[in-house]
Image (cartoon, rainbow, N blue to C red):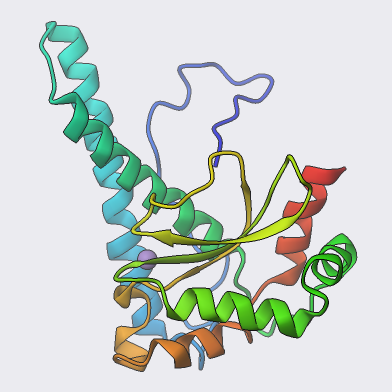
Amino acid sequence: MYCIISKGENLTDKKFYSLPDLPYAYNALEPFISEIQLKLHHDKHHAAYVNGANAILERLDKARQTGTDVDMKATLKELSFNVGGHTLHRLFWNNLAPAANKQPGGALADAIKNEFGSFDRLKKEFSQAATSVEGSGWAALAFCGQTYRPIIMQIEKHNVNVGPQERILMVLDVWEHAYYLDYKNERAKFVEAFWNIVNWDEVNKRLETIIK
Ligand code: MN
């Protein structure tokens, strides 16, 4: 959830957000997510958040250049929504994989066992969080930097109920646009399908980067 300037990068090199390519083919997650569903989700919905965030940055740039004001409250609300949408989708694509391992490994397996008692208990709690998001939102498995405990978050829209210090390990998009073509109104079926395509290596890598 953070922008980091790496060594060798100039502060002016990265002025705007960009839509990343998916790390696999559009049909790679079938039969759990169809090609048409994934293509629409990535190319249209995710792209809209990237474009939306960039438009606000341009609006802010322009206001500063011309010495005019923006509606600060509305602008910052819109920026948070769009940047949240973009960032969560980036995390989401990368924590999915075709023919993924079915179980977490490494430090993640230990963290899950310590916190939840078992992988099945995590699955149950996370699925309950995902299916019960009110309206549009996400389920997230995050990691608290203060307690060193994994924590489940239920993010409404793209930016509500987010713990400011929690680092996200895994997300599941349960906006209707994520599943409606494939599952119609049956969100629970999409949530169940999700467990077949979790990229546990990636989720474990995110945790190990934090605790190393
Ligand atoms: Mn989405």
